Amino acid sequence: MYLSLAFVLVSLPFLTAAVPLAESPVSRGIAIPITKRGKPFNGVADTSELLSSVRRSVAKIQTGFTTYERNTGVAHPLSRSIKLFRRGSGGDPLTDFGAKLWYGTISVGTPAVSFTVDFDTGSSDIFLPSPKCGSSCSGHKAYDPNSSSTAQDIFKTFSLAYGDGSTVTGEQFTDVVSIVNLTAKSQTLGAATQYSSGFMSDGFPADGLMGMGFQTISHYNAPPVFQTLISEGVVTSQVFGFKFATSGSELFIGGTNSALYTGSFTWIPLTIEAYWQASFNNISVNGNLVVGSTAAIFDTGTTQIVGDPTGIATLFNSISGAQPAPQFGNGIYTIPCTFDTSISIDVGGKAVSISPASFTLGAVSQDLSTCVAGAFANPSLTGDFWILGDVFLQNVYTAWDVGGGRIGFATLA
Ligand SMILES: *[C@@H]1O[C@H](CO)[C@@H](O)[C@H](O)[C@H]1NC(C)=O
Ligand SMILES: *[C@@H]1O[C@H](CO)[C@@H](O)[C@H](O)[C@H]1NC(C)=O
Ligand SMILES: *[C@@H]1O[C@H](CO)[C@@H](O)[C@H](O)[C@H]1NC(C)=O
Image 1 (spheres, helix red, strand yellow):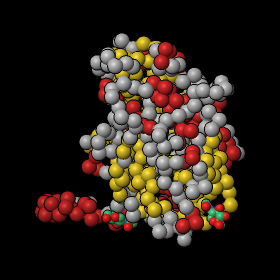
Image 2 (image 1 turned 90 degrees about the vertical axis):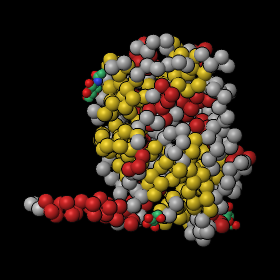
Image 3 (image 1 turned 180 degrees about the vertical axis):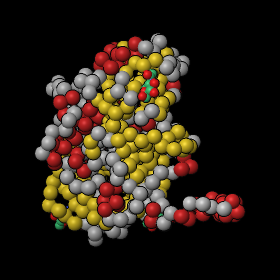
Image 4 (image 1 turned 90 degrees about the horizontal axis):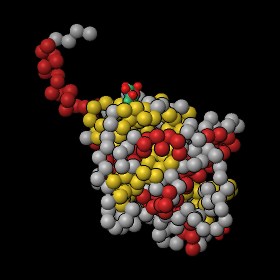
């Protein structure tokens, strides 16, 4: 189409100004500030907590594979890529796993009551403590369906098993769930009558968990909150965005927050809609290829980068000063706290640099010279996939496109 120069000149300032108005109000997303709160951090890492969180992530993913098969009748393609080890009896519980997770506020029921939840892309169900939950839920706010005029009992129970044999159990309801002013009118949610050790309030500051994966791994086999917002027509953009940082972290629902990134997104297609699973091209250290193309599960509910023992050993072999540190636990590596090696993960042709600060998880002792590295080996993983958690996600703005079945990466502003 031919546009006269005069038209372009006259229109440009107007078009620029009009951009925000061009979107319909309902397509405009909303931002939810998110926080990460753990125990006070004095520079020394809690290695047992870090190890527990890795085990818990792997166990969570294993559980989701089982659920996937139950929901779809087909085995998840990666279900044979986790070797299960029986845990020894006693000791070593999966405590504190949630201490470093990202959470924010939602409201549930009528009248609306606010709760804090972890926003977890590595699961798909939402649950809160029930008033019937005893000491295992103490310190958390309870969701009482009997006090909500919109709650409906759907007469189903649930039981979410974690790798240490502990479970979160309870009853399923449907009710109104709102994220700021975006309201899912009929959302399946769980009211937990028992929390497992990992969700107890000293280690898990949020009241509950909100899964942001796909329905195929929902233990309720029900649409997750964001999918309900889509099907009820509350959001028109089927995308949510995340920025994780020491401050100004945010979940954006119904699009992405263009103030928080520059340039355009590099998208990679999901291999399967269950977890947020897509392959990275490679990992390089100082520009040299060390790990080739591998499937990855992008998980906001995992702190570290987690891989198989061989792959992780290859990565650390190329990092000067890195050492396996089995004295702190199987799968842990240490690096000098002055670490400044350039590590980059290529996603869809976009090289995401892992900043030294994000890769250094704290010192192993008070002298603050040797630090825990942000990548952990887990013996249950066979090498078919890695888990990319916070240590990766902090370095890039991410867009999670539920409608398009893809995940996007843009440079943080
Ligand atoms: C939510 O609030 C935002 C900001 O006030 C507004 O732009 C948007 O239209 C509201 N959305 C809905 C669904 O009410
Ligand atoms: C709600 O009230 C009914 C009837 O008193 C009771 O049986 C049920 O256990 C209560 N549910 C919860 C979640 O407290
Ligand atoms: C990683 O993959 C990207 C995309 O295929 C490629 O451009 C880049 O050269 C690779 N990096 C290394 C170190 O091989």
